[in-house]
Length: 425
Ligand code: IMP
Image (cartoon, rainbow, N blue to C red; front, top):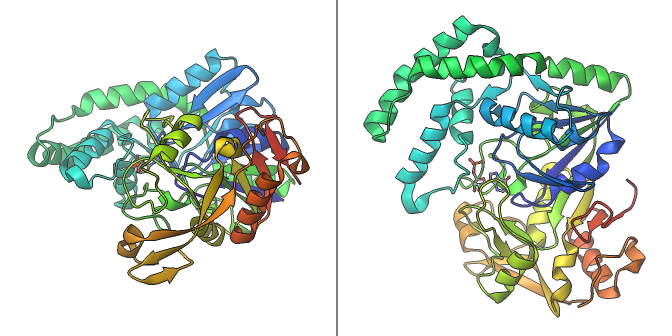
C-alpha cells in the first residue's frame, strides 16, 4: 500500500498543477485533502489549458478516481460550474467522489470574509475572499454545515435557519451589510444538491480499501507550507493544513500509508497577499521575474510578489513536511540573469538565523543573507536530462539540494509536460 503526498514548499503557486498532472498516470486515486476554491491549478493537458480550483487535477485521466476529501471546504456553486466546464471540455466528472464530511461554503461565508478584510483595513490578510476562513471557523466552532446535510432537507433547513439568525445580526449590526434570506439559500442549495448527491461517498473507506488492494494514491496539496494554519506565517496564512500531515486528517487514511512526500518549490519564490517575505524584490529584477514567470494569480488575477529563492524556507518545509523529494519548477525563468542570489540565512537584530525564526516579529524583520551564484544566460527549455543543463544551472540545483538536505528528483524547465527533467518517477 502506498500514498504519496505532493505539497507546496513555499507560499503556494509553485507549479503543483503541472507536476500533479505529470505524475498522475502512476496513481489510481488523486485526492484533494484541504482548502477549497481559493486554490488555482493551471494544467496544460495536450492542447488544452484548464484552470482548476477545487477538483483534483487527476480528473483529466479517465482511469483515475478523483476525490475531494473531508478536509476540504466546498462552494457547491463553484464546484458545479467547474464540473460543467470540465464536462464541456470532454473530461467526464462522473467518477468524482466527494466526502460527506467535507464542509460547505455558504453565501454568508463570502460576505463575512470580505467584511472582515475590509474591517482590518491596512492589516488585511489579503484573502482570496472565497469564504475559506469563515467556513473553517464554522467547522471549528461545530456550527458548520456539511455536504452530507444536503441529504436531509429538513436538517439542512434547520441548520441554515439557526445559523442565519446569528450571522444576519453580525452582518447587519457589525458590518452594516445585508441579511441573507434563509428560504432563498435553502432553495439554491437543495437545487445544487441534486447534482452533488450522486458523488457523495465514504471517502475514508474507499481509500483504505484501495490501499489494502495495493492501489496507489496521490494526495494533492493546495496552497503551500508557509500558508499552513499551524506552520505558516500566522496570521497571514490560509485556514487549513497545507502541510503533509493534513493529507491524513483531510482524507481519513493513517500516516503509515504515506511513503513519499514531494515538495514543490519554484527556482525563485512568490507570494500573493499580505505578510512577511524576507527575500522580496521590489526592484527591476523582481519585475522581470514577475513578467518572465507570468506571476499573476490563477484565482484572483492579483500580481504575485517575487523574490530570490529562500533556502531557509525550503529547509523548514523539508522539516515540517518530512519531504523525501524536492521538485524545482520554473528554472528556465532564471535563464536571463547573469548572477543569481540564494538566501542562506537571516539576520534579525544582530542575530543570525539559519532556521525560520520562531517569533513572527523576528521573521517580519528578517534581513536575508545571500550567497551569489553565477547565472547560465542561455536557453534551457529544451533540456531533458540533468547532464544537458549548463554547468552553472547544475551547480545551482546542487546548491539547492545540499541546502535542503533533500534530493531534487524533478526539475521543470518550461510550462509543458515534456519540459521536465525527472529521475526516479
Ligand atoms: P484565503 O485562503 O482565501 O483565506 O487567503 C489566505 C491567504 O492565503 C492569502 O494571503 C491568500 O493570498 C493566500 N492563498 C490562498 N490560496 C492561495 C493559493 O492557491 N496560492 C497562493 N496563495 C493563496
